[in-house]
Length: 411
Image (cartoon, rainbow, N blue to C red; front, top):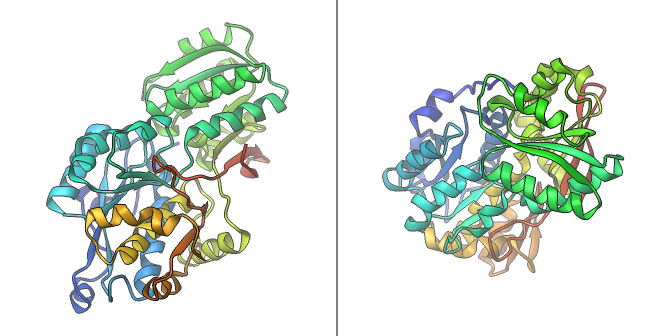
């Protein structure tokens, strides 16, 4: 998938961009600065426009409802990690030290999230909420309870995918997984669950990003153990699309399985609908109540008529912004430690349930001393002891040339 260019890419690369005029911030007290680290360039760039739009929508809704802490507005301070851990650490350092952000949404990739947490945010006590870092290793960070994520970890995705593959009648698979925390973690989770269901991993290869060809690896995998399908765990623009093209052009595999990193209509459009017809896979899904999901989707479509509110990790990004805003309000403070201490307070039950677009109601409940329980666009955001959200996994498939959501599964 070719990386999409954001309309405000220059602002992202430069580092900081406010959604709201400085005069408004001064009129109602100093704005509260929230860092947003996205992969505007690099292998994940194609996923960013709708994810960013989801975050923007959440902040606009909260500000339009009167903001937090007696009228203070939430201000996005954006940065591009270039889908690169070193760049992620650099921009996170700037956000924490120079921009003095209160919290951070992101990063997107698991490896970048781990690098940023260890090098920057954990030592500084800055809470981060990633909408899309799914590797099991994120749960193992010694984070002093500062790392949270609204995306469901890959342990569940691996289990669900293994079941779907076996139900599709596939007994033997070959795996190509990107050589990072995400790829290795999800491949391991799938392998264990697949073997427990009687499946066989005929061969596996961890691949490096951005190589001009992967024909040698694919040829070896195709000739080892008679695999019936190729499971590809990666990102379109940093090797995933090249792997699919190499395989299709050389006839190495006839059936393809993907995960959340390859869940994008652009993959189908660029590789070819006929070649990928019947491909299926998984990714973080939604457990949201229908009325809450539709409230979010309708608001998103009004603000972004050319984008899909159901695109990968968009609802999770929207929810990440909301829980941070609610935590600030519940804490009565924009201090980093206060936000961290109140993320579970507003996200976990029990409490009065509030959903997408209901910030004013939530603020009124908090003002009356009531506890709120945010159930968002991606479902109930219940953070466990390691900061992981509980949720569902989407089963998706390529049907008639379109990426189609088939079901939302809990196991």
